[in-house]
Length: 190
Image 1: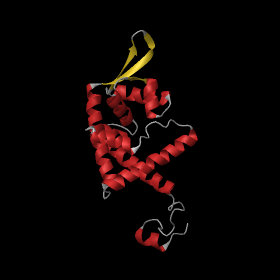
Image 2: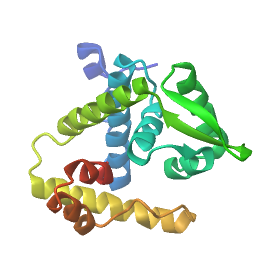
Image 3: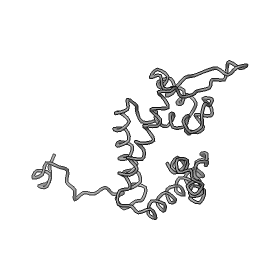
Image 4: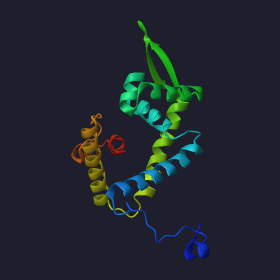
């Protein structure tokens, strides 16, 4: 293998060969998403959690106890995926599963006291990582980026037949903030 002089001098890859997608919005989105997930994963590991588990805890914290089907729908995953994550969180004593009175086939999931503490820590973690991600952005830039990303997600959701809920307009989110509910607005923007 022949290495460039730049690689030999600095011990790094040749940066003259840029990725062909570097001018693509999709490529930039994938890179930002990958780095965000990595940073969030590092922070979650400090809490003893893996990426994806925080979403279950946040969903339960925001919506209260729910069935596995409801949880899977909110997370936009298949029920077996939600069930596997809930099993892991149950073994960590962060969630409890109970059968529905009158219908033992229905399992309802809820947070434990420790799960509620973890959910609060996750909220702080998300705020910290979002601050790092958007460092140097003013409020107008943040709002515009959020709006554009929601629009892009909604476009793809429409093409794939995915559930389009959760793509609230910024006016709806701003309404939550104006009503004195910044924590709900933060959740809607996450």
